[in-house]
Length: 115
Image (cartoon, rainbow, N blue to C red; front, side, top):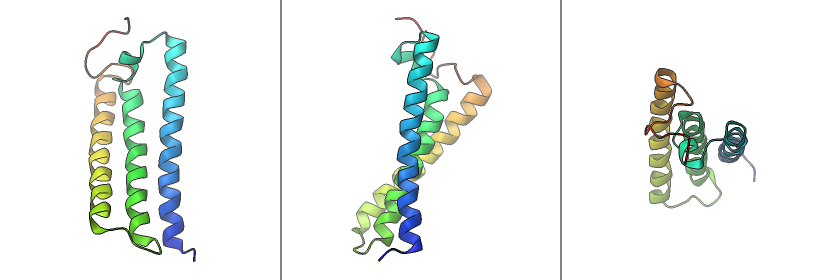
């Protein structure tokens, strides 16, 4: 039976997965336009902040799906997904702060955009 809780938890992980795919697609397009190499692109807050937020939503949705499913998941899986969600949330906050402070297209690791 479909409940509001299971509907919200499933929507949450689907939204997180869609966000991750949209982020990678947009950054791939931007990389081609700006002539960046992948190593440079993968170290910018422009990619890392929304990707971390999307993975936080995905992990949180998976944890909630384990809680609210008809056959609840084992406790250790719920804790693991919750821990991942918390870690991705912290990471997203740190990347947003870095992007606001240093610029969204400035790499975190100080790499150049040339091979």
